[in-house]
Length: 358
Image (cartoon, helix red, strand yellow):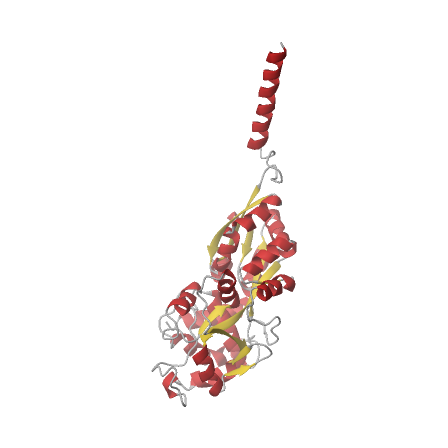
């Protein structure tokens, strides 16, 4: 009888353990069940959400976050948002449009990245002599006004005085993405239109004033790629010959330095446009579960630290500052000359006007 009772008790205990595991209640810190939350995000955040460490933090808070990538402009205007719990574009103007259209009560901006120009030491020296680059407080500044003057005159690289480092017979232009598709190109338009207008473009008259000059900055490039990864990969692999000046997100460069994959060489440098804009990664909750994702991204210190390892500047600056200090990444803690982009409708009208010229 005792032996039979012992076997029966063992079977019951084993069944209990199996049941607990099936229900997700027997694995230590794992929550009983995970709520699946779906979001549509700017593609540059895909690696962050795919990271197992990030997934684990969400799981400890009862969430399984699934994401689809899309362009920020697409998220605001073309993506069917009814099937998502949150939208997470890479720009504040796109988020503003979504918030207004969906009547969202709040937004979250857990991290950002300034627009910068990736280049090389010989180009820095050349543009310093030409008056386009100057030394800032701990970083090198790219004077957008000086650059626009050279671009407006159709200046070629081989026409710069004393240029033996890069005597290329092509126009002195910053390489960008396609303004018809990409958020980074829209951010470049925000920077250049601000300088050409002497302030943020807010009226149709101001749009008409700046469009001839800023359109040439895109059209004169010839072929442009649709994603910011394209020109950045060209910068990393093809080097100065193809891509002497490339507009990128600071996070792209910092991420490569932090991961120490040897793609960033000692002669590769960042220039900070004066002025520049911040690409503010802004989450718009579309449902209650999406709001919880926004709260966690904004307040959870582990998620903040992980975002910093992907090169993002976090809402709590200590995370980013600790990462760049530990990895000895030469970027400024604070960027002063930052301006706001135009409102979404203004930016869209200018982008559409440029697109019609292709």
